Length: 309
Image (cartoon, helix red, strand yellow):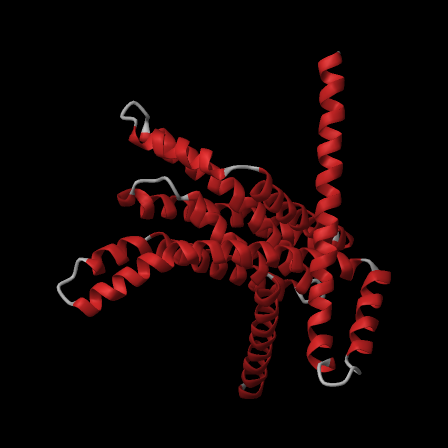
């Protein structure tokens, strides 16, 4: 009996160790989506009154947990009954990431955000505006966005544990869902209150503390911009990487190019290590541009047909 108990404990320890390793791998692969998730959710809260920021973040966090309660069982059902669908779903997810990244770039360069910010400020200053409805719209929009990004995270995680046992898949998917949700919205809460912290410190009696407060106030908008840029770049890296790994010819070409580059003198090792990531990102940018062009052309063509009919 003692031997059986020791064997059982050893099996449990092995399973937990495997789960820990797979969770770390999945977390690394989903880090790109996480960066964009942070920036996007922090931006979603913009325009809300300062004393309502944390309640709005908490409401979106609850909605995110509900999204995960839908997505995790759906992913497990796909893995159990239609494992062949995992790769196509990953490819679709990668294509969507590339499209969303390119659409963000196109919006940034082709649209004037100052008009949108001015309209938001005007709405906040207007006493006739229903702030409860304004908050609800913000929360609903953020939860919809979270559903898409959560689906990406779950799909990437499912691809990581596709060959694991069902028990390990449950543990890894549930662990990633909980950790990512708490991590993202905990950081979002901290980011959106940075300016309040800086303002409070800037009014302190100590000159050193005031300097720290002014530094935080200067840093906060730059942090948001940096998160947005890093998140967009990560979308191309992650999405492009998923697409290139799913297309054998492209994947082998990138691997061979990196191997040949490593033989270059002086910078070969560094460049060879960076080249796959850079080529994945380049492929992601091109794929995102093509998808956006096709969708834009299609919407215009079908729009004309609907107008004619």
